[in-house]
Image: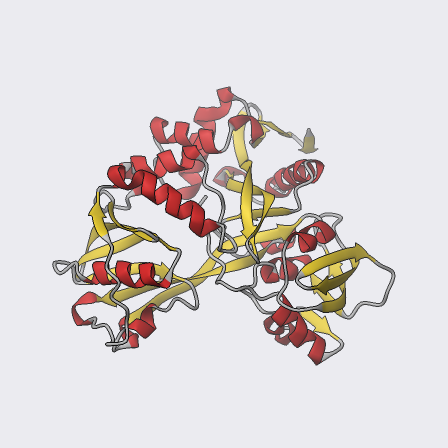
Amino acid sequence: MTLIPGITIRSATEDDAAAIELLGDTAFGMHTGPEHGDMIRHVFPTAEAIVAVDNGSIIGHIRSTTMTLTVPDERTVEVCGIAGVSVAPTHRRRGILRAMYTEQHRRTEAAGLPLTIFTVSQGAIYGRFGYGPTIRENAVTIDRRFGEFLPSTPDPGGGTLRTVTDAADSVRAIYDRWRRLVPGAQERPNARWDMMFADPVPFRGGGTNLFAFVHPDGYALYRYHHREYGKTAVVAEMRTVTADAHAALWRALFGLELCTHIEAVLTDNDPLPYLLTDLRLVRTTSRHDGLWLRLMDVPAALNARSYRRDLDVVFAVTDPFRDASGTFALRVRDGIADCTPTDRTADIELGIDVLGSMYLGAYPARVFAAANRLRAKDSGQLRAIDEAFGAERDAELGWFF
């Protein structure tokens, strides 16, 4: 397919692997290496990737795969997960990204997948393609030396110190229980587990190998880094099914007496600060988006999740990139949705990117209304939408891609 003079958009082949790796390493400032490159290709098969080619050279790339995503009320839906989006620095501002996304979205629509998700490196680019941030993350640092738990904080015990290799089976089983409960979490394929347990040196960020604390209902994977203020335990991944597991694992991490600080990523409503005598010790160092989402088919996507209250509303949705725009009636009874196209007058006007941000419950409609990115005729209906689109648990990314 030739969409830009001199540039061809086509499916990747195995012969393109080395050139794709070079482009990705250049774009993301890293060294993948052949072993890790093979692991990536097991998660994202080369045959499903798209490349842009200029005179025989790979100058653009998108890889994708089908993922199983949890949406509110512990439902799951098959979605398209996109990764490795890159354009060579020699070919900026030529419409190459738009051409690749045109082809990617055409394929996703043909496959009948109602949602596309991906983790974004630059926040100013993807709204034009109909994506909105849909998960929030809070990077925190804690001075462990001054941490003290409140007398009311549970001390359930049950955690054990394990090697990552020994913990692998337990970690996989706990993660699968956890991801079925949490909006935004994805089923993790075997190849991605292999990547995590292999713990390649280039992806340690200068830290040590991974260590593990395991509880029957949760786990914490962490590594040590040497910061200017002392040895720091960086939590690479914590997944807890119960409040007792959460408390037990944080007590174990605070027991790492030879490190001065702990770094982690928390959701907005993580209870950790409220377990401590001084909640200010949990200091937020950055607040950022963890996942972006686009609705490919509005009725199919809205029917795929559940809702927290009954609702009757008509949305007018604009799509700046594809043909998913339209006016849709959403009727919810006992959490179950029936969304269909309609000729009725809209109650709510919004962009498809805003609907994507609202989809997992992390971003309320009222915030977008205040920013004039969502227009509602009735303030009561706006409150109803906020309540209906909420979720029992904070949305959280299962695994980074």
